[in-house]
Image (tube, rainbow, N blue to C red; front, side):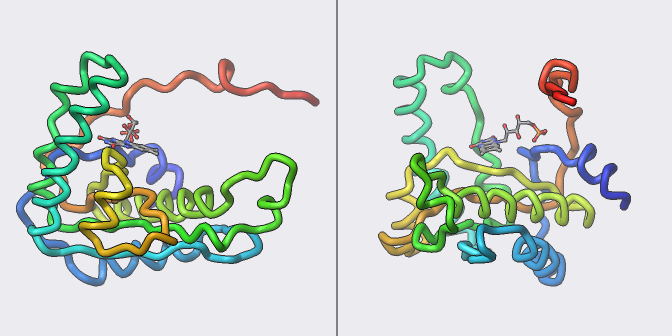
Length: 190
Ligand SMILES: Cc1cc2nc3c(=O)[nH]c(=O)nc-3n(C[C@H](O)[C@H](O)[C@H](O)COP(=O)(O)O)c2cc1C
């Protein structure tokens, strides 16, 4: 697949087939992940691959509560109706765990930036594209409290459960949500 086709064609998937994923496809995703850039090449990521429905059930249960809480706090009317049943359908969850002790020089700036989160995000995007190129659907999922994720996936306090990537075969792929154009988002300063 051409790389621009992969970038344009990737969609967030919220509807998965009841079909396990071949191990080698997950392996290719993880290989793509670890080739992401990171500050000073400190590779501040770890990945937990969960292939047991017990984890899906626990995540769904806590995420429903989180959703209620966030709906109340945000006042967003769509949030209570946002269906997260796909958490029970999806065969594989990849938890992306960041290591806050593995930042680069940017941590010493006057206003430090969280380099480890940025690097983990780059690794996630690599994974999503590698999944899409292999016919898999993914969702970058963040509707959970870190304390809950730590408990469910046995993650220690010094590590940061950044995101959970849902991976499976898509039932259908939707159209791309509208993007604002380059002319609105880019300033050229030649
Ligand atoms: C940091 C981040 C967090 C996200 N969290 C969620 C989430 O918790 N639940 C969800 O359904 N989608 C989540 N998404 C997916 C976005 O909703 C989606 O990328 C966006 O609507 C654009 O759609 P597309 O991915 O199909 O292009 C997240 C995306 C990012 C980058």
